[in-house]
Length: 107
Image (cartoon, rainbow, N blue to C red; front, side):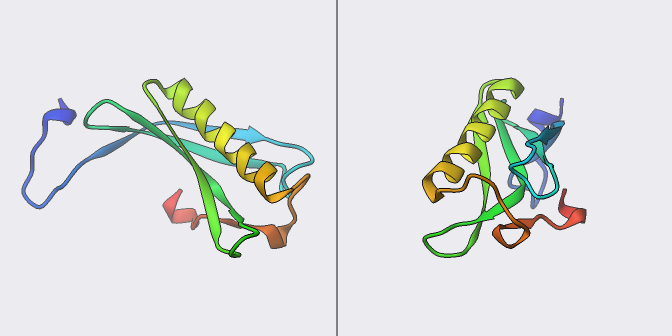
């Protein structure tokens, strides 16, 4: 099983177990974002958005991340964190200037 692999020069392995397209019309300038969920070798799940919000307090882009014991819990926690960032920064909708997308090859 992949979780038990221990290979030279490899610190850890994560497996992409799900990818979701999240539609948030009219909040997002292109209507959607993607969330990938990864499974760690320890069996925990982490979701990550392909869209980063340029935060109001420092202007740096930050993507939402959520953890969970299931794919669904990681997905839900990722979306909840994304919505918390929107609320914390006072966004009702995002413009192209408010966001950055991950490199296509990264996602």
